[in-house]
Amino acid sequence: MTTLRAAAQLFTIREHIKTTEGFAESMKKIRNIGYEVVQISGIGPIPHETVKQIVDANDLIICNTHVGFEGLRDNPEPLIEQHQLWNCKHVAIGSMPDSYREDEAGYRRFAADATVVGKRLADAGLTFSYHNHSFEFVKFGQKTGLDIIYEESDPQYLRAELDTYWVQHGGGDPVSWIRRMNNRMPVVHFKDMALENGEPIMTEVGEGILDWPEIIKACRDIGVEWAAVEQDICRRDPFESLAISYRNLAELGVC
Image (cartoon, rainbow, N blue to C red; front, top):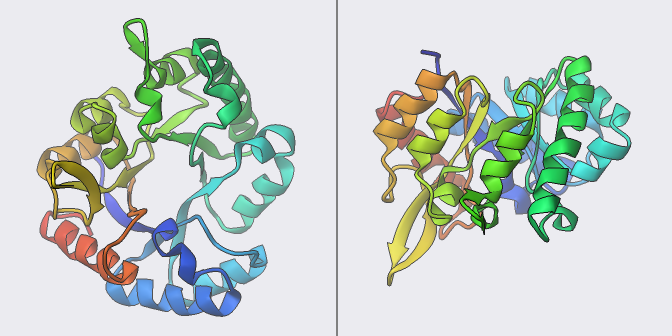
């Protein structure tokens, strides 16, 4: 069983981190909430050295990123250098490009291509993970697209970054899927689901219907290092949403 630490997924506050000034002020707010770790995603065109200086000044660690798949596939060296500068070991993509989504063969092709990308990153001391939404739960016979991605790729080179909300949204069981990724998932995305007029909406961790004690236990059992709190859509100030999630996770023993 591993220690599980909370991180703030910066995509949640993407509208506030488009400039250097906005990023610096936002990192102060994140640190004041209590987060010691962030996942870089959704930031503006800020020099990599400046990002490193700002996170260091706020005593923050970068645990993971979201980057574009095409850049990793076609020109990985600049991204490798960026992550080495940030002392960030884990690299992920936020979604599978549209060109792979058309049919079962596309999912298999993505699994093969992702394995090649992951091998290049592994050679540089980095890991490569895939973040799902719910479209990957499309069925091809008895298997979902997400089954194919993980069964057809090499687990040494393609890790998981499961998103609890999107697994539930796609009809899967977050706890079961987490346990399937044993020793294959360094970072998980924590996002809760509530129901409004029978329709799913995103909400703060601990404010919805997901079984967080079981999710947290499963993450610890399989070796997840970081729980990145993400909320794509907030119905209040996104910093307040991140604070609510942080407080709820602290009560559940994740800090």
